[in-house]
Amino acid sequence: MIFEESRIRFRFPDTCKTIKFDDSVYYKKLFNMFPGAKGVDFVSVTSKFAAFIEIKNCLGDEGNCRWRIFPDDKKMETSHTEVDLKGKHSLDIEITEKTAMTLAALAGAVSHKDTNQSSEEIGEMAEKIFLNYLADPKKIKYVILFLEGDFGSHTRSKKMIMSDLQKSIRKKMRWLNCKVSVVDSDTYDPRIFQIGDENAKKSI
Image 1: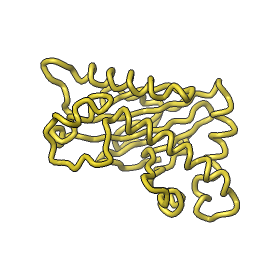
Image 2: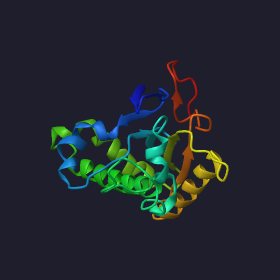
Image 3: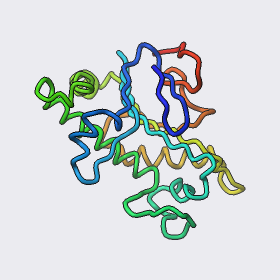
């Protein structure tokens, strides 16, 4: 299954059931009526895991995005950016909020299963996530931030930046039994998704 997000092509193994969550009919027609609604880019499930994946491709726009790589909005007031920051947060806060709202939306989709056409696309997946994945501690729940961009500097390498974000997200996600990872095109797990045009060959 192939999707394009932020100018990058993502390939999910055939063993995955994947939806582009914030493009789903349910999200656009029902959940989006909730002021401030937001959600992750992809929700993907297999027999062994459920993954909530957010994509941030900042290549070519690092200057406007640099403040977002510092946890807890630390650089919001001091970093130069041409972007309106109203309602925006550093990436660690954003992905935590998006994951929480995605789970809330999936709960709503379960409540509408078989009663509202807008929920048909994600209703079955939502039910599976709640009954099979969240209720079973043996099933892995991934929260993944895919961060592309040349953010390395003399004081902080890209690896350090991703590690700091991962630690902050993990701390904020303690309310959910999950594995948190911040990855890029050099460090992503090809068993969960791959980048490019060829068919995904690996799977969990």
